[in-house]
Image (cartoon, rainbow, N blue to C red):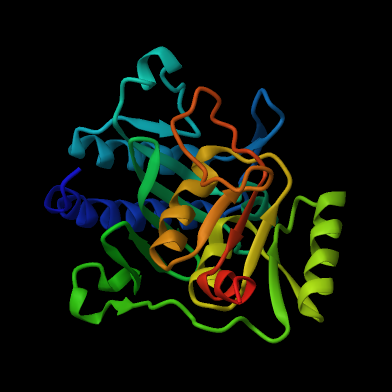
Length: 272
């Protein structure tokens, strides 16, 4: 896609992120009752309302969507799409239900199976981070979406943290995580493990508050696509844990392989 066309999408997506986040917070502040989907994962009214707001907004772009809370088109149709939005209307539903504030709205623009632009909004912090191919990573508050002169441009942090900071899920752990963490200790000495729910981990990675994020538990495309665009724009990588190849999207299976996210600073250090 041409940059000029993508630029016209940015205000649409920013506005949608804010509207969806405000709707999510209205429900968050009530005594809501979650339900379970057929796969056993939790679902709340906030997931559905956010989904409706985002779907309606993204329809303005004329680009199809892959979303968590809709019946997605079969692969026979999807494989013909060169460009698609990949959307999680409420990433971190378990955290939302626990009311710990660690949930997000995630929107990614995927072109030819690559995530080229990502947006992650924190409803609680009222903050959005976005960026991607040809778009410098930017952080802004909800009340600044129409004030680009106040947006904060982010550059890659050039040094890893001391001790090295490993970001991890609050809800999912495995033996592979322990193996990975031990390997990091052997290579870098002391490490510090940070738990955080949802794609909010990408705020920490982008801002240099974390160095690496391994994930050895099931995730879906909409969980990671936005974060990948942002991290790659900062010189980092999101790669298949087994093949070391970049993750791709709009696959026949919408599940991700196990993956590892590394910041540019960590990559540079490992290559020395």
